[in-house]
Amino acid sequence: MADTKESNDGLSFRVRLSPRASRDALGEWCDGRLKIFITSPPVDNKANAHLKKFISKLLKVPRTNIAIVTGEKSRNKTLFIKGLKAKDIDGRLK
Image 1 (cartoon, rainbow, N blue to C red):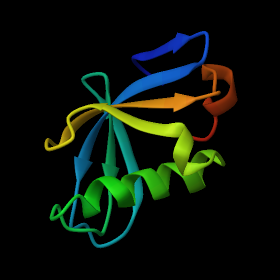
Image 2 (image 1 turned 45 degrees about the horizontal axis):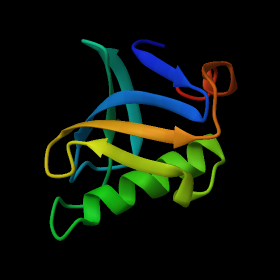
Image 3 (image 1 turned 30 degrees about the vertical axis):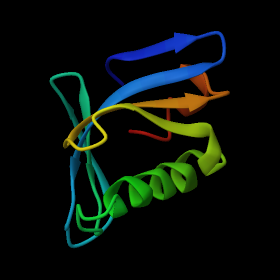
Image 4 (image 1 turned 90 degrees about the horizontal axis):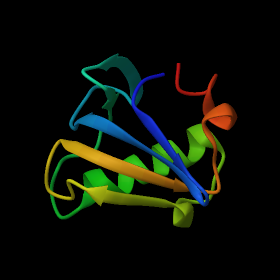
């Protein structure tokens, strides 16, 4: 895992989103960002909603605990997951 930042109330990490992929999947860590492939198009906030749903399912946290801190309209985003620590997701994002 690379470039995660813990705080008292959660964890943040950077992602590089690839919308309109053939399937939802995690990619490799590259330049401090986790590559994430999702099937949704980047239209009308659908990709962001799909990203939250995918991460929620993967990390087993409610969607309401996931926030896009930076990059709402960009492929490069910073996510904040409320209530998680790095040790909690160590094996889930590899």
